[in-house]
Image (cartoon, rainbow, N blue to C red):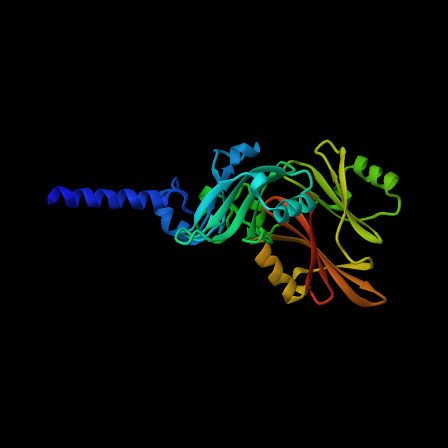
Length: 305
């Protein structure tokens, strides 16, 4: 009788263990972080060393709130994703490289809850969440392992230290290399430069205006890379503070780009009437231009670099 009881107990433990395989948990996280992890619901996407970073020792990189605790994550290939998802990726992250994807489902009912897709875009990681139908939900916040606790998600000198809001990546127009200024003035003669950024890889993004807004990217050696027309209403733009944005716009940004960093915003008018807003943000090392209409409602977003 005692042996039967022991056998039943062993089978029960084995059953629970099998059910746990593929669950949304991080098994390599230090034990004292488990409680915090359960709240954050993260999944591992890569290591910082895989990015060619020089931020000290290698650390794991996590996509936060990727799935609900207790859900099951099943790896799937790019070809298994719906056309809704792949079309979104191609339209918004042209030239992306697929890294991995997961189907997130209820561990009890097996009903699909969502999809998490990890890509490389301009050599930087991007983790995106889509709902069960394949509709885009949000860009997931990324964190290094040592920053799993707390709300900031960064440490000085770390991969995401720009989250301190000190705008260290802003490049004064006067500091833009002469060769880049010459290229823009010769190639885009009607452009007026309004802002510039320098990325961690030392590439430079110049924001300029000629009826519409444009982002022109240059490599660390000041070589032209790509030019984007930013999504915005064509009109007269005026730089504004983040606090001047409509509340609905701020809510959208906070929900769709968790822990984003505000970079620059423009209020766009025509005949003295506000027609739209253009907001430049940084989400996990990637710059985005987000277009809102006059009421602050979302219109379109574009990944710049």
